[in-house]
Image (tube, rainbow, N blue to C red; front, side, top):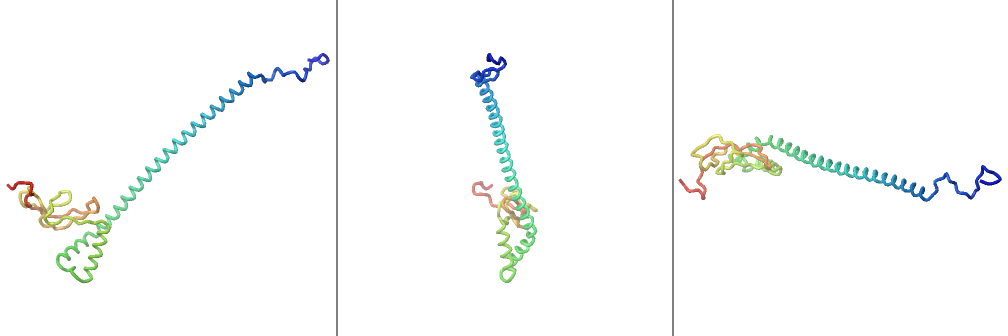
Length: 187
């Protein structure tokens, strides 16, 4: 306040009402820092949650893709088996014709060889030969002769077929007693 004008303060006098003291500046800076740290912590937490969610989404996608590939392979195998199953009767007829001697020469031999090649290429494997050991999971026994101590296949009435580990059709056989194995003593 000046002598001439009691309501007016001199221009070079500091404003007492304004918070420009070093303590006030430090307090304002600390409050701003706390606010920035809180915001940084919040953003960091949101980022960490987003990374975690992305990891879960990637794992879910990988699991879905793996399951899809398994289902797709099973569908292909099931379709392959369904189609090949329709040709088993034709393969039986060709086996009977081959055993009868009708497929030694001529156009049916070529047809038989081509069909056999296609079925083998798909992975069809015939089983059930005379003298093989009897396996109840592969062979359907329609007659049993003997004691049953060493069961082997006698007459093969119808071959069995499988693709990979899946049995399409069991072999229909008669079962007889075979010669005892070398490690078993004869009775």
